[in-house]
Image (cartoon, rainbow, N blue to C red; front, side, top):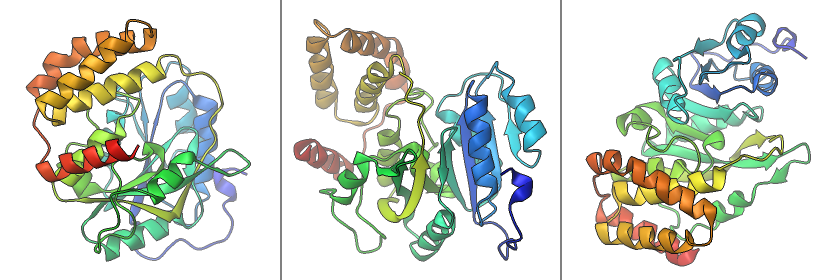
Amino acid sequence: MGPEERGSEPPPAGPPRVGVVVITRNRCTSLLRTLDRLARLPERPPVAVVDNGSTDGTADAVRARHPGVRLLTPGRNLAAAGRTYGAASLATPYVAFSDDDSWWEPGALARAADLFDSHPRLGLLAAATLVGPERRPDPLNAAMSNSPLGREPDLPGPSVLGFLACAAVVRRTAFLEVGGFHPLLEIGGEEQLLAIDLQARGWGVAHCPGVVARHDPDGLPRPGRMARMRRNALLTAWLRRPLRRALVQSAEVALDARKDPRARSALVDTARRLPAALARRHRAPARVEKRIRLLETWS
């Protein structure tokens, strides 16, 4: 069923509260399926697609099949920072993120907006994720539900310092205030730094399992993903954590690099980016560092 077959359900009253940003690169078929699903949501969210330099005709296909979508073509691969670019283009108070293989369940965005409306300190909502046609709970759901950070009285769920970007909704002003997703990290474990930066500014980051995202990955291997995730964990340490912790973490990766090519790749890539990280380094407040250490002990 295409977007023209949404049905006769009337549009929601008032201006939309949640917009959706989708980043994509060379995954045209998957993206069009996601846009079809987003077009059928009862919330009728405005959608911005950030095409990160696709060469497979993505932009033309989106214009032809979903002319109402705001298509942004920065002309290069912004990676995760494309979400920041997309969020800045929208006018809704809240912004949900989807990847080109993920979308939101009907009613999820309205529930998210209600939670933001009633919890003014909530900066980011980490949804529950169901994977594949079988709707398998992502393992991160349980980890977030059992977060050792507990639940703060003015937030709608357990506090977390990690989440899936494709299953997150943000308060647009808070997200842009902290700079969104850091461009230095690109893709792979980029979420923790955003959570740290939001909490450093006093915003809450909470898991709300009543808001549900769907994820249908194609199962194809993602070459270099594990190395990128380890690199980004190390860069996050250099960007926000005490110097001693960054040095210890670097030494751990260096030790693993003797036998593990992924650790070697992470170390080399971190070294290339380290001058830029040091130029942008500012330590997270002690209260946030304490939370990071608690999570490290717990895991």
